Length: 146
Image 1 (tube, rainbow, N blue to C red):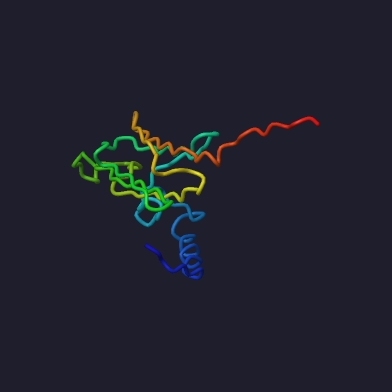
Image 2 (tube, rainbow, N blue to C red):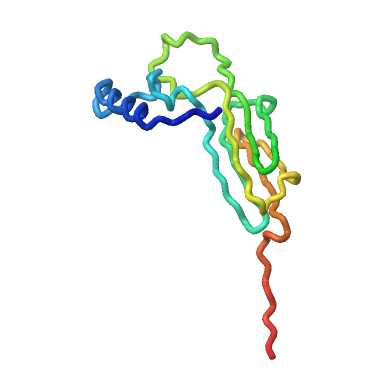
């Protein structure tokens, strides 16, 4: 979903926030805190000479609630962390765990082959490994002596 950005709205929200809490700081459980309303799992993206890898931290999420897809050169990880406990919010002092749907998209470089991507899920960490194309792998060039 695209949202038109208005810098004045952002400035107004920031200035108004200064009067809500000292120094504009809000606890993460405050409903006005935008960061608390959206949830995206943290990821690590790294590469070696043969692969591009993406690790998504998804603790407490069943494998059946995770979906991977590739369209053109975009990899999308979608899923849902379900709040199993039907507890009243009244009893919590702090509730930092986030629940609900999430989606992360990654534009893949043209040097990888997404058709050969492999994914593993171990101890709440989803690892997606995408091999590089042969032309993208580093190779040594022999120097001839004349």
